[in-house]
Length: 139
Ligand code: ATP
Ligand code: MG
Image 1 (cartoon, rainbow, N blue to C red):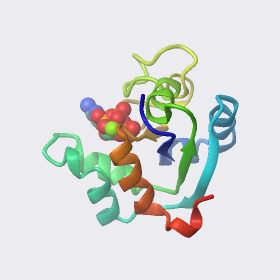
Image 2: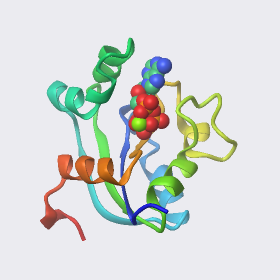
Image 3: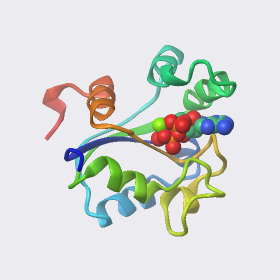
Image 4: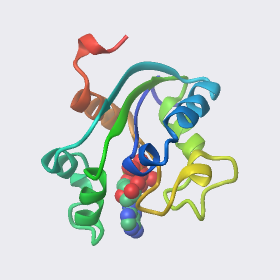
């Protein structure tokens, strides 16, 4: 069992396709409470550091370019067992393998342009939330 918070982003592909409203609906209907939310964008340096764990991967530069290609929505979300339940809600990284009914299965374009991000641990949720929000911006 993990903690109550996760961090999510609606990625540039889904913002471009006008899916913000539908994706937020899916998230809140699944029982998540929005604790912080911001429509913003990532600089190249921010995207590089956000995905620094992948810097040796062949897709890193393209991923960084994609994440800077347009606005994103950053979210701090609360629910029981938040990390795992959110990752179940969004589905596999590759939308062609994502379970039916998951957010990525419905809204993602490709393994890279996969509509949403979800933190993979309590520790990273904390780091990623702090990347976008001050304590005063969380409720
Ligand atoms: P995220 O961290 O964004 O929630 P994830 O945890 O499902 O996604 P990671 O392995 O952490 O997947 O990869 C981070 C992101 O890098 C993916 O969401 C996707 O945008 C991109 N990515 C992952 N694997 C590939 C790949 N093989 N080719 C292109 N892009 C990829
Ligand atoms: Mg990840």
